[in-house]
Image (cartoon, helix red, strand yellow):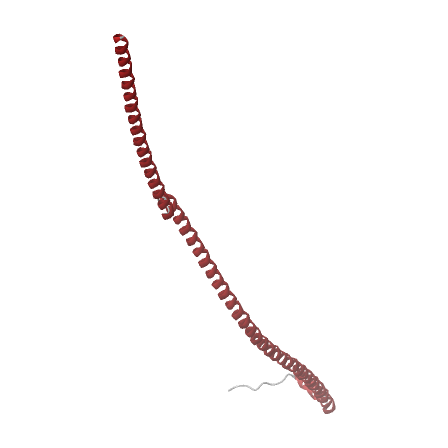
Length: 194
């Protein structure tokens, strides 16, 4: 069987010495301290709530500003995209035009090179080919040849005539000489007779 705890005599005497008024004073003091602590806690809580409200307001303002910034960025992004698309289209057109001009210039250069090469080839062929006389020159040469042949024939005829005349002169000279010889012989015969 458990024994009940019996308070010591000193404690019992002290407790008995404390009267009810003092006990009520201690209780009232404790209550005041508790009430003050609760009031302080409530005040701090209110301050914290107020600070949190200000913080939330600041956060709300930041969110609103962020939304405006994002909207502006979105609008500017669309504007930049439209501008970029326009500039890109212009750049593509410029590049296409430049390519067309380059292709045309290259084609013109190739045509010029081909024409120059063809001209040089024709020049070389003309230099290597025999020079054919002109039709007029051929006709003139034939006429000159015919004239030369005619001149030669005339010269031959003249020579024949001249030779013929020489022969006739020789014959006449021979006849004259013969007649002179006969005349001299006749003269000699006459002188002998006399």
